[in-house]
Length: 343
Image (tube, rainbow, N blue to C red; front, side):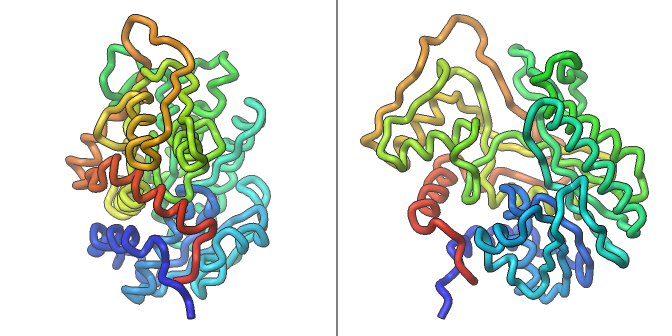
């Protein structure tokens, strides 16, 4: 007897806000990259949840470097009857035969600045060529707010029309420039109908707790007993979108968004990093202290804050689950299971 899926409430939330969209995918064949990552796992979870409940009859081929590791991480997804695993990465894979209807490109590779730029741009080029040859007419690319470069401190929110860009001669710009170049490549393949989702900051089950993101590190600290350590002065400003809302946004952009049009994807409420740490402490471990590494300097704080009016006004998207509830749900999931369980 299988236990209930630990994300059932979240997946029902996704379905409630996307119910009218799924007929577009009925009987479709999808090719998905990055299926074991944060975005990709939520896309697969929500797609298969909708498929099983609405009888969509979709087929999903998921590109993964390590099928065995994918099976261990998310066996209920890997073993689903609608899923087939394709061994390879975004640059080097044997293309499955036959036609596809949809490409979801959520893969990203990190390494040295040179490898980060080259592998991600080459991967996007390879996938666009594959999609064009396979007859894909609807696609989604998970890009990043990093395409805008550093946000001026006097600009409250970044709109999709912001004219800034990552510094071309700075190796630290490799990731943002790779995403920006990949967006341009997509524009050169109009037949594949690429929709672009520029992601900012997120919180939710499946998020990595051991990387550079503040929220993941704060959750790891709180669940580990504290203290919650803020590496800087705590003043930079962010917004956070919960993972279930992220899935709603991504599917809505793919299925209702305009091809070739970028949409910022992120939360609404602006919080300082210090406020985020304090909220994690309050919701997860009230006994954990918050330690700020260095004193705050005078002046305007750094910002990484999207303007999401385009997604809100054109597609009706919102942050339905607030930050405090998002933190609570994520902590509850992390406490209750170290691996997803079968539905």
